[in-house]
Length: 209
Ligand SMILES: C[S@@+](CC[C@H](N)C(=O)[O-])C[C@H]1O[C@@H](n2cnc3c(N)ncnc32)[C@H](O)[C@@H]1O
Image (cartoon, rainbow, N blue to C red; front, side, top):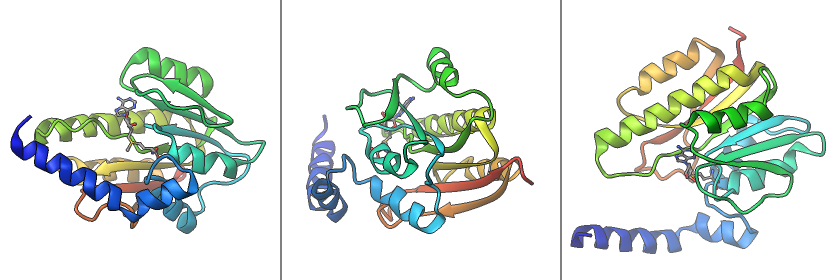
């Protein structure tokens, strides 16, 4: 590891420890600061409701699942997937596997027949290699797979909330969403670091154009 990388990872650790969202997540018993992104979007857009069937893609360590599952009530259902193992979250079904692999997708599809999902959440982000072009390609490939899955499994009128990175391919992705969902809006919650190019696209009313 280069000196520069060591200094930047030390800076990242220091920044992480001082981050108020990290401290608040720990205080409340949540596994990630990312829950505050979903919480803010949910407060504004009221996505999580009793009785919904929700899929959480890129779920580990499980903050979004922890936050969302209780809001779905006893008639709700939540299925989470990640390439990394995840400590169980009560009443959340979990698939451990690479979303890009056909057999992993098949496991998820076996639990979610066509037109069975109300809400697809995706906070998937590939491991950053540091090579911008490779990272952008990896993340846009995952974003395309998320959209394919949402199209195959969402109910008519369903919702997709997905993290994407602004850059090459972003406008085309928004356009593709607009062709399939009744409304598409961009959300940049306060807990999303301002310098990060990540934004969340909220696509509502699947198939209702
Ligand atoms: C930002 S984290 C998600 C944090 C989560 N929303 C939370 O609140 O705890 C992104 C996740 O995407 C997962 N991921 C990246 N590539 C993946 C892939 N190909 N298949 C499945 N999960 C993947 C990573 O392992 C990581 O856990």
